[in-house]
Image (cartoon, helix red, strand yellow):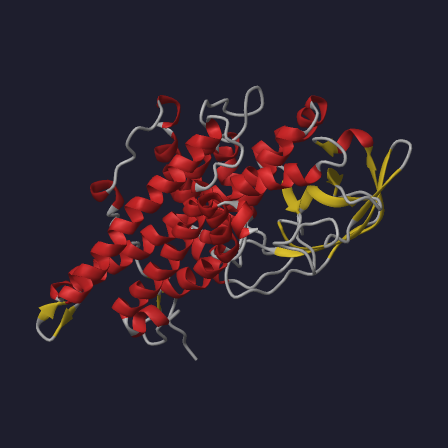
Length: 415
């Protein structure tokens, strides 16, 4: 029996460069988007559809794209000299890279977030000699890194009473016991930044833990609806020793490290939402320009004209929001709030809204993975599957609305 070979549909023409412009970018980051776009085209695009479709397994980590993006400098962007690029606006630059990666693969944007944004921020709290030990392998892509706060019963609530992973103090360090869940890159990671309850105290400590240490076990990969290239799995710690100099920040003050790290990740996911929304919009625009229905171009229908004009306007706002939030962080605001929460919630909701409309514009072709008769494959179903998680992780959008409300109305009223 003969089979028709898979034929991927070509990427749509980009509308971004003629409709939107990165205005007021600082001089030190003007080169970053072209650099990232070239790296994505070279190292990620050839593998992106396979990454987005294949089921998660221990052997399916996207090493080729992972190491390729690192080799062209993408992983150096968030970090100061002497290890990294030493940019004056590293958060803004990192978000530009994230958007470009997400345009081609939201999965890989999630991997990049885990490797470079979450760990980039968290490791800024490490002692200099620890940074010297681990950062070169992170930036080169030689080693994968994980960030672990979430547990089976602790995610949005990271209070000491909710956290069950415990770090018990010893004379020369800590003994860690517990389980972390949904941990990106864990199946291949050499290091993990892990939030633990500090003994029996109502305090928490962030530790850098060697994933190759005795007592560390990584479970099987989770099977998810989308983001299949962002492979997650449980990490179990059983009497794992962590030396005292691997505390990130100060012992007993790990929650502040975790929250600062998650705030950076929040802005990065806002940028990823913009990348996903942009590619979905580009697919929709191309379909409106080329599809004929009842003797007219689909784009002649006023409903779709107005609908896509609204999406284009919101995309302009979403891109401006994440860039503003990133600049605020680069200028010394550790959280960038409330615009950081606005950028994440708005950008990720937009990704879902535009993806849904792009599928509607394409009809059955938007809903399909592959047409059996022709071998044509389609990306929109992958985009839609991937977009949903953006509204959930790095701060669920409902929680972020509460954060915004607390700034707007005041904690004395909202709680």
